[in-house]
Length: 192
Image (cartoon, rainbow, N blue to C red):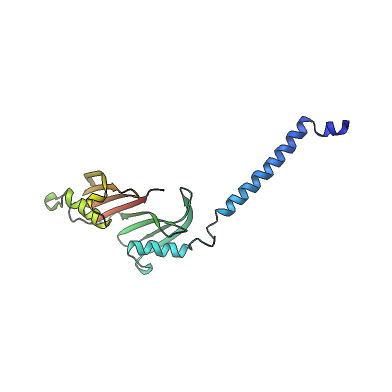
């Protein structure tokens, strides 16, 4: 009996408890990491997510260059980050790896591609810029709440910054004031 008391003395109890706790934490972490794998049977392949991003951008693989993608997590959702460019724009997509839903997209004008235009005589106006952004998003003014509508000049290019949202998605557009072309657009779906 005396031997048992020495074996289970306070420092020994603590050491055994710590070892058991570390083993349990390791097993929990291992199980969690195993469940985070993008290769589960219900997830889409990286190639499929790239194809979905290209389709959303209205581009084919032969139209673009520098296609890159990697697996990631966006607010705990398994996804693929997809990047590519064409002669005029750089694209960035976040695609849900399970459903194929576009979580976020960004299209940015490549620097040096636009001609500077300081002549405001061809200005399309704020209302036309809002209309262009809404049309591109397949929405109308009654379906959205505008959070930003302003005129700006960036690198000598007069442009309109238009931001609005629905209950599910935030939209951010930069529209050329001279010709109404979309210089940059970004969408971000709200987590539900």
